[in-house]
Image 1 (cartoon, rainbow, N blue to C red):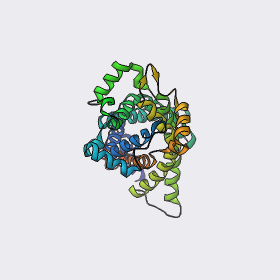
Image 2: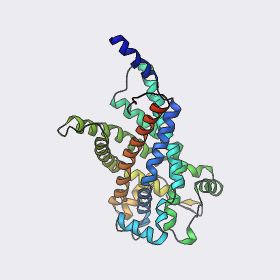
Image 3: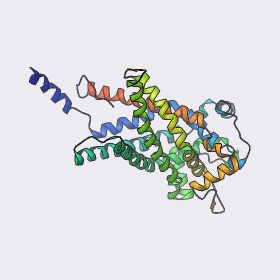
Image 4: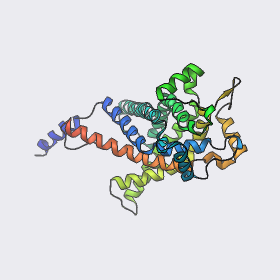
Length: 319
């Protein structure tokens, strides 16, 4: 009887979504989550650019920033740059997921075992770097489109959409300008992926097996994601603000405003104070945690739907 019962299990185990579908679902889940948290990303960008060069801060806090944006530019301004944000998810998330899956399969094939925590962190770091490099052009367009509304009318770039932004950047500043700030972007992605992979699993195990004894589900994922997001925000924000400043800078008389990542960090600390490196902390943190939770929930639902309606399997594979 046990052999008969094992046969259906073996058959169902062979049924799985092809890699292309997994990558597609990864990108779509990231894009769906972005539709919810995009206003927080815009607020974070505006606050990071505020007070450049030691000038007067435009916003007292995140709520004041939202209020000013809505009153000056209208409610829909909170979704400025949504096209670039979706393109970033389509490139960065899909690229990161594709590279991580490739490295994971290659590891299992070569060593004939599942990767441990350190190996997973290393693969996540490499995957994050590759995904970030692929997604940098969309990141540049996103930063510029979300920050344009704060500039004086005469200085605005007035990109009409993400395609217009990418085309004009290439025509006016050269093809390499699309990868401006790629070093801090890649560095941030490496830090984010390494921190998230290490801390998320540890928090999840603690809440599940520790004193709280949380059951597997959305509540457990939410708590682990929010604490993981807190650590990730603390470690990655200085690189994020460097990325934002470099990607938004203008070239005057052939000279760029910043020479590189180190120059941004040193000038911000000297002119605006050390804590300015964590400017926009609240919207960044409030975006990162929910985005992770929403991405996983959407990904899980799409996997379940594909397994049930396409593969005809009653059970779905876990994340």
